[in-house]
Amino acid sequence: MADHGVGRVLACRGHWIGGKVAEPDSGDYFFTSNPVDDSPISKIARGNAVDVDRAVSAADEAAKSTRLSVRERESVLTSAAALLERDCEAFVDLLIEEIGSPVGKARFEIQMAVDALRAAAGAARRGGGQTFPSDAPDRFSLSLRQPAGVVASITPFNVPLLIGVKASSMALAAGNAVVALPSEDAPLITLRLAELYAEAGLPAGLFNVVTGSGAEIGDSLTQDRRVRAVLFTGSSAVGKHIGALCGAQLKPAILELGGKSPLVVLEDADLDQAVAGAVFGIFLYQGQVCMGSSRIFVEDGLYDRFAAAFAAAASTLPCGNLRSPDTLVGPIINPRQRARVRSHIEGAVAKGARVLAGGGWDGNVCQPTVLEGVEPDMAVFDEETFGPVAQLYRIGSLDEAISLANASRYGLSAAIYTRDIAQALRFAHDVRSGMVHINAPTVHDEPHVPFGGVGDSGMGRTGTEESLAALTQLKWVTAQM
Ligand code: NAD
Image (cartoon, rainbow, N blue to C red; front, side, top):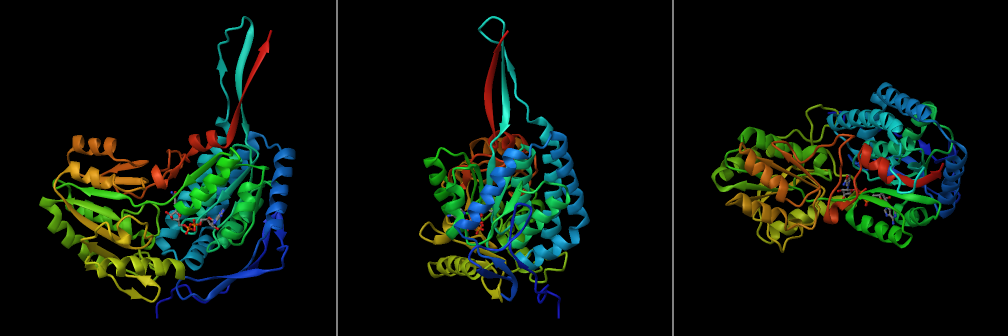
């Protein structure tokens, strides 16, 4: 029998507050489970408002008393990158066991997290202000860029290491302290990251982790007046709630939310390249990727060949064995998400959508699914499925593709495959999306680029420059000589 990575019971863990493990105030714990078979893998502290207060107090105290030089911040982040490389295999195991990552996605995520730590280390030295000419004679005029203070980092289950690292490393590079609230489906990875930062030399209190149910304790964190900025990555519904709470306090919130990303294939495209881009774009990590290309628009002249090749590729994708480097598709994270994926497929089929590939399940693994004939009255049409489900549309022109792509309330990433650069650039210009890729999949990220979406896909951008700006305050200072 294949080794699916099941059966290793992981630790019992408390919060991480002020540089050490902290037992939950309530004494309560909850179990996390392996998505392959729902067997329990760890017992995790169930936080309450008292725990959040302890973590924010520790962060606030550290932000005020621990003034790391930029050289020290650079050194900690560089060491953390080296330690993550050293501990790569342990993180691979965690990503497989805690969130059902195929091994290839786990390695990809770890490498991106290493890159993000190095980029943040370099950004620590770029946090300066400006000088300005002054209208007043003999007056120096300049700006100082100062840390925001305590930053809340709230992360989703799907790329918990990469997003946990992106948010925290840039906050630390800018001189802040962090309170992290990880997804209840992925707490171990963030707790392990806390130990890694500590080993890299980060002083106690600058990175804290409170675990538990976000719905129960999230508001205590985001509404705490000592928290000066919130970095949230997750669903649009929770993001809107957090945005409203932060807005009421005039607190900056960067919101990286869901998507329903369009991929357009024009008839002059390289068919093999387009099919490979679509397969990677929607089936990587069983479609649990915010940038997943769930809506695929193919021009009439290429449609039949594309549909046949894409459906054939989907039907033969290696699924299930998470330890095999060929596997792209593993289990859906939890029962709530499985019910959502199931209802999107079954609801569409009941209303007349046709299944070109997949549609069934092997345990908790949803087969890579390709649907045709998806109409606006079906939930899957514009709701984020967050599973391995692609919907195909035949289009008559680029204009039609742009108009259908823009009909979504989301706008995270978009892609087009064509040999005609003028058409590609027109698409890039006119599509309503935070990110666009030409002849490449919708799924792509690098540490220094402006990453983010429009509409229900979010507000604000992350990336070394953008995060530095968002996680600091500019102060204007003048001096009369
Ligand atoms: P989720 O919104 O259910 O949870 C995200 C986080 O929010 C978790 O840590 C949860 O504990 C916390 N939370 C829940 N209620 C809260 C509250 N009231 N206050 C504060 N925090 C609260 O999302 P998920 O299911 O973990 O992740 C999947 C979603 O994340 C998808 O919609 C996906 O598109 C999105 N996502 C977006 C990006 C991006 O960069 N745009 C990246 C990855 C995932």
